Length: 258
Image (tube, rainbow, N blue to C red; front, side, top):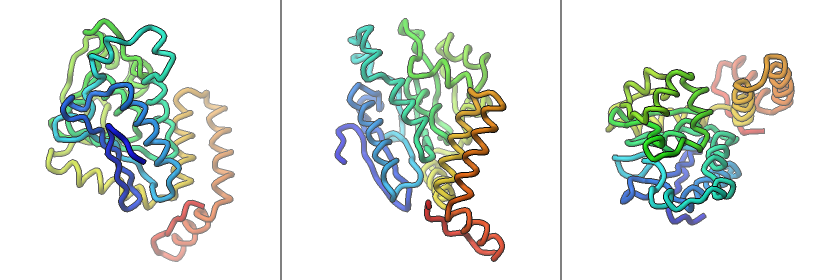
């Protein structure tokens, strides 16, 4: 597929989506958000991809937020058209694990994008924040909901109501990101992390992610019922036979996603 604002690459079962608007610090406009949704959907249908990585072009910005010129022109009912919230929900519900490789500013929609990924690995010079309040709006890409679930209500209020920007170390302390690595090691660490995931059984990864995502909003009984039903599905897969057989034979399992 061809995109105007994204660069796509597939290697060793890892599909990389790179936001490519360095002249705008990778700020997102309407078209780039739609392209992001389409790219995630495309990789979810591609057998050659087992893990998705999202990052930004250059070494200054992951995604610095929404393009302010585009944001200024948006009208009330535009929220119910091609909304950022819908795109980020698509990323959150991706069938395949998504890693955010955060190589710089992750502000506004960029912070929300990182939040909906399954894993967040950041360069030590990365910056995070939800500065929408300074523009007279709120983070409506799911930020008031997803960020709260990730780091708790007090920290979410701190970031959203003040608009403050924090560094990578503080983001790690808040639980916003999984790891902080030196700038020059980010690419290699993300690749190592992604390749490890590609060796896991794809169906089990997908169903475990569904159960985990639902655990945030479902009550215990509903969550346990879902867990049982998903486990029953996994008991029928070839990968379950391969995984248990490989363990008994003391060898590495070769999962095929069936």
